[in-house]
Length: 439
Image 1 (cartoon, rainbow, N blue to C red):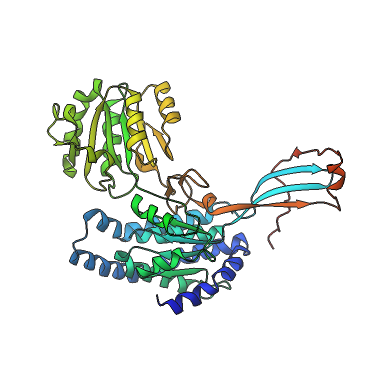
Image 2: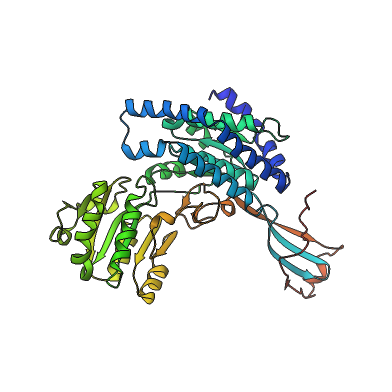
């Protein structure tokens, strides 16, 4: 995007965001349904654009995991539109009362949700991610500055075009959407600290760190997905096999696919040969430590594999002697994204759930459940591995902040400064709020 055109679009984005956030719940939901309908009606345009991106990707011999993320086909469209409609069906986060307290007679305090403002999103070459991000921002009343990976340029451009056309008759329109197209635009985004209120980068640890080090804008980091699965000594082997195969093979090119498998030594000789056979349909490459190599044929695990996000049909396997060793390995080598345990021992599971310090920690289920749509959030802008603000799949709650509202009938501070006590009575969150009621 040319700098002049970019500045022109950004000059109105804050005004557009305020208009969007002041729409009624019904109006924003109607916009979401309109977008979903338009994407379905204009599907062939989007598929043609995606074919163009895929042809370029093939010419450039991009890596298989990246190419898989790039595909936007009928299945992806169905999932994306279902996600939009699920977002529309969710409760409106704007104006939701988080706290209500009576400070004194006729002096009512509320903390309510409000949009963050303008969200900047730099994300990988996944066209469906653009749809998820845009839907969540619309529902939560936020404007969005989008910059996707260059490999998905034509698909993203067509998606934005279809959405703009669909909203052209709406009184708010689409000025709350700014789509940046060139690699140079990333540097422009990093300098927009007077316009963008929150920046959400999705990509490698190095990429996220670069963003954090080169902007004044608050950053919500989504780093590598170095997820681990621990097979405990008291695990159901059939369950362990099923969950491991799903966690690795159902869709390996994403951040919640398992990359490291930790197996207790007492079940390794029974479990590993069966797992190797179960992996055969996908030709999974196994990197194993010395004890794994004594049980199954595998590639020797180097020091680097324990810190590697393969994003393909490849996995690192280590035999451990205790739950503590498994937890320690996850602590030192994981990325605090998603980690899981397979065990029939509830106490063991509860200790794992408590002590593994990751955004998502699971018991007896696939790591692939770490997803905003599967969590019932409608969609997600990413999975945050940070601890401040939002953590885990970031849905609507991660895109709002709050403000305090106080209503009285002429009270002043002086009497309280002289000793008059406050009542500080916590009130029921239901009921009529100070927040402006919808028309």
